[in-house]
Amino acid sequence: MPTAAGGSRRTLVVLADGIQAAFAAGAVAELGRAGGRWEAVWGAGLGAQIAVLGALGEHDEAGRRWRRQAELGCPILQSRISILLERVPADDEALVLPDPFRAGGWLDPEVLYEHLAPERADLPGRLRAAGASAHVALADLGTGALEWVALGSAGAAEAGALLAAAATFAGGWGPRRVAAGGVDRLVLGGVGALPAAAPAGAFPETCDIVCGFPVPAAMRPGLGGALLETVQRRDECRAAAIVAGWGDAPRLLAPTPAGYRGWAARENADLGVEWPLPTERNGELAGLLVEFGAVVARAALESGR
Image (cartoon, rainbow, N blue to C red):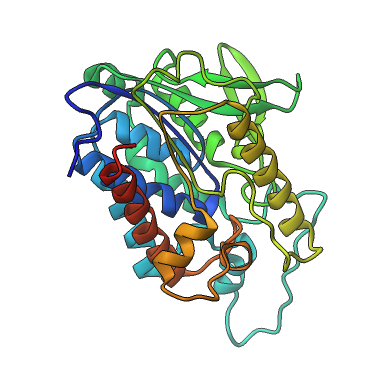
C-alpha cells in the first residue's frame, strides 16, 4: 500500500461534529498507519480532537477512542436530561424537563470533558515536543467573528478550554466561556464555526482534508422539521459548500453516495437517508462509521490520491 506521507510531513484538516467524528477517526487512523505524519493541523468540531491526535502522532488513538464509544453505546452523546433522570430515585414520581431559556445545550458537557481529558493536559507543550502546530475553528458570539485560533501559543489551561469549545456545536453542547488572550469570550465551535477562507498554507501538495459529512452536501429527503435536525443540517450544508469552494485539494476524504453503497454492499443503501446527523446516539453505528472511514482512506491511498 502506498504511504500517506511519502517520507514528508503533511498538513491535516479534520472537520466533523458529534458522531460524524467516528468516520473521521477511522480515516485519520488509517492514514497514520500508512505512514501519515502531520506538522500542521486544523480542526472543527470533534474533528479538532482527531486532528490534534494526528499532530501528536497518536492517530491510532483516534480510532480506538471511537471504537470504545461504540462498545459503550456512545455515552459521549448522552443528553443531560437522560443523565439527570438516571439520578432520580426509581421509586419517586418525578418529571425532569429542560428549560430552553437556561439550557446551554442538549448534550452533557461533563461527558465531553472526560472524552477530551487526555488531549487537554499540557497540550501546548506536547505540540511543541511533536514539532507541530494546531488551530481550531471557533465562532466568537460576542464579536461575531469566525476564526481559526492557535492552540500552541496559548497557555495549558487556555488551550484545553479552546479544544473543548471547538467540539461544541449548535443543538449539541452549548457555547463555552473561555479566557483567550486575557479576554473573556463566549464561543461556539463545530463545523458551523468554519471560516469561509481556507486555512493559511493548508493546501500544499501534501494536504489531507477529512470531513465527517458529504462534500458536496448530499440530498436528505427524509429530514424532519425538528430544530435539532435542521440546525445541524444547515451547518453541514454550509461547511460542505465552504470545503467545495476551497478548490481541488490534494486529498479529500469524505463519505460519498457511491462509496457508501459499495461499502454497505446494498443496492438500496442511501447515504442521504442513512448518514447520521451529529447528535444521533447509536453505538453500533459509531463502530460502523469508524470502519467506513478506514475503508475510504485505504481506497484513496491505493488509488494514489
